Length: 318
Length: 115
Image (cartoon, rainbow over all chains, first blue to last red; front, side, top):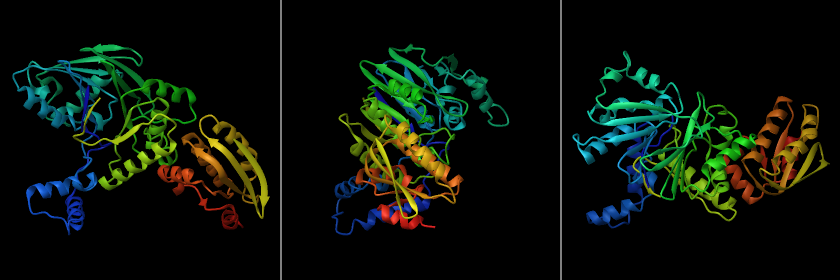
């Protein structure tokens, strides 16, 4: 099973600006004074040893992940703007003549999680089958409304692909092309749902847009069970703990601290921090990653959780 | 988890010992209740001596936040003092060092909260 990240930013897509790029170049050149940059190989080697926040970027597309299961059908998590490059990738890989089946699992229906659908090229390809799995009974309404005038010039009925809706309930186990899937109810305005995928002894949990009430012991135990021994948990770590339970309480998001604590208790192998605050720079996200890795280390009791931060383009093999 | 009260100058000092995790947060919260009630504009300031706290989890931090909110509403004064190195890091990563008054030792906290 492989996870591929296409959109990892929370709430709204963002983009690097010219001053952001300039600041990265200045930082890179500042450290290059005594470095041998005589050949393209030497230049590449120097760039590769720079911090990811200097030489790269965590990216700005809103939520969209892909799970490669090894099966013939494709699994997509949410339809944020990251689904646009995913569509291009799929068309380049399979060509427009080869009909494909896509299973889309929706965390919820807020705009940042659905706004990529009008730009997901496979919906315009006849023969493609797209199954939208959701625990929200209004999912079809939300996606049709997004396409309706005056919001978009292409109506939902003009999609050439065959689109189905599969309304599920939390705890209901289904099997999709050999992958076992189950949903878990989460605390978020309008409700959200986490998804757990299991196949061939590997497991991945997608848990975004999920606030945790620390005083609710049953809710905590429910998430520990949902995350139990997962190989990867993709976790909404949008805010600091102080913000998440004070000024941003009831905003529907969680923190890096709670992510580590839940994953430690559930004996998760890798915690992938996700849904980055759109106001955060690459430098800030990199610092949060460093701090969270340190927090995991100093609070570890036996089981170690590997802490990572998601970025657009990241691939993880489970 | 233990909470031992004493008075120092104009402040009530609560010496806290043990781990403030999911198992002990409720006991910690209950132990604070009578002292928080007395921490008003005209009452004694409250200093939590954390030199004996080996670890604090998210649920323990939530108790501190609720305590600070209550005291603020009562126009009282509260501070945390003498964090161990591990707890200092937990405060920094969680950003609780930005929302609570934290001092390096009890004497400094008592002096800072003096009316």
